[in-house]
Length: 129
Image 1 (cartoon, rainbow, N blue to C red):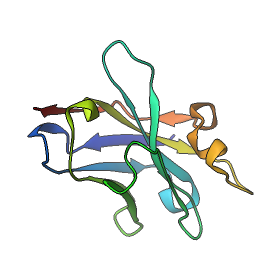
Image 2 (image 1 turned 90 degrees about the vertical axis):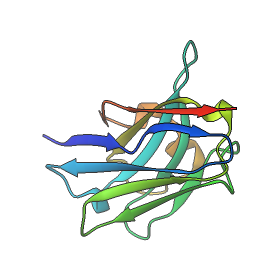
Image 3 (image 1 turned 60 degrees about the horizontal axis):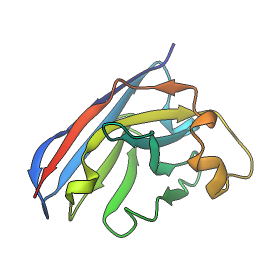
Image 4 (image 1 turned 30 degrees about the vertical axis):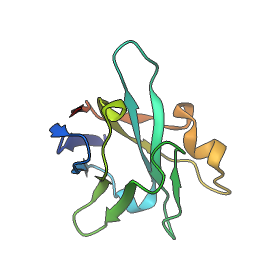
């Protein structure tokens, strides 16, 4: 059974940076797609970024492109989300999730929460103005 544990959240001022970590046990993350989603209070969970197995193709939501970077450290079995130039609207609980989907991975595939079968507990990110 795979277990995903997020860490690295916290309180930061607008314009600041945070790095989130998603550590896995029970599975090698390099064999899966791993994504970050976020959910703000009273809103639906939305896609943030994903990195896929193999060559490590990455996908980003338009709202975070050029500010956030997703990466993977296979030796540590951990996926990171480097978040720079944070804005108050980035405030949310951030979740990492695991997907076993293989083959042609399109933006639509990466962005759909339905394609992820394992989720972490989440880590809170709060950006003050």
